[in-house]
Length: 399
Image (cartoon, rainbow, N blue to C red; front, side, top):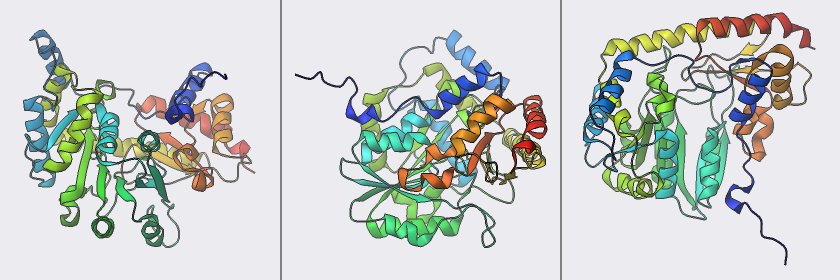
């Protein structure tokens, strides 16, 4: 008898993530790492002090499975304060171990084997894995780059309509979008909402970059659009808004029946999330408006710094409306694809980016091969050194 495979089929096609691979490569070659999207600076001192006080104060045992009461209250207050979104903290909120866990919980709670899930490409890589884990089928629709007729990234509405069918169960909507930086407009959300209503489809609205949005774009919470209100699970987290990615505090907000479905999955995935960090996150969400305004100003300056540098190095870099990533067109450099370009960038130029073709399904992977993704959630010195290296060596590669 032949030995059975070690790996279960559901994980057999997933290797090391592209983030781990390129971060290791950057370390080996002492490259400036603009690949993985985490800040190289800490969040607010007041929030870190609140975590320390919670630890010293004995907040160290299991939190309630749905999340600490004070944090759920703070999540509801934050939703009302920024979006006019009325949220019952007792029936509409679950705290999770980061947004990545929340995404898995939503898909586990709402999607069955054989169902179909619609999502936009390029996508956050856990979407594809989680859809596979539940035995569902993804239906991907590509976002297109700005062109003569579109000032921002856009989607073909006929392609979206064609992706929906009798087996469609869920739409994943990421806005502000990683990695294009697209911020979906009200008109786009209403179009998608009407399509979901027609097909009785639920929505996972991944809004982890909700406070990193650049004027004139404005983030609109999908759940506040009437046609989407009763069918949307909002996912967000502390990592991006407070530069505390290692704390892994996320949450979902949903109408009670949807929250119940997600909670049923969450209770058997992690059950509960780190108690002292939950206490600190309640403090973070109640920070004054000035904190959030300063965060936007900080990232606006970083965006402009890297955009200017990439363009000076000869790259056609697209200005994002939100998030902390920039996609640059790498056509004309003579490489077979984005992976080859990004490997050369690390080993020969000394700068790490991410090849975004890994964020596409097989059908549209070629669309991602003309881009490289760079993160600007870094200190000014790191951004400037990356730009210096790019300007010094990149133009020589142009054909």
